Length: 147
Image (cartoon, rainbow, N blue to C red; front, side, top):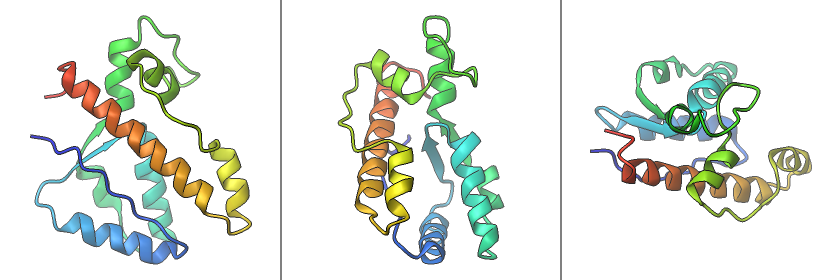
């Protein structure tokens, strides 16, 4: 059975955040990562950021990973115009699953303000993004799209 827990790692010290994430993940015998576009973005990003700090995260490629973008793209692909990647976006998925997400600024805005050490919008944006990912996951379970 897949748990739907959400865990957030962050802070101003990227090295410590990466170490905390790696330590947390090591406690699980057979972890399952659940993401939206994590196979294409999140995992490669974490691996690259780890390399900059001499931390090896290549093991993430070997962990079971449920990428909800791939799951929902298969289900909605015939009725939703795909993005330029050929897959549906999280916004399209939210629309078709009737999931409301309040806005906390887009990713570009968050990057801009983070340069001024204003991390609150980044935390809000990411927290809402995780809420939406968790809700999409629960809907996929409800619809019987996941085993």
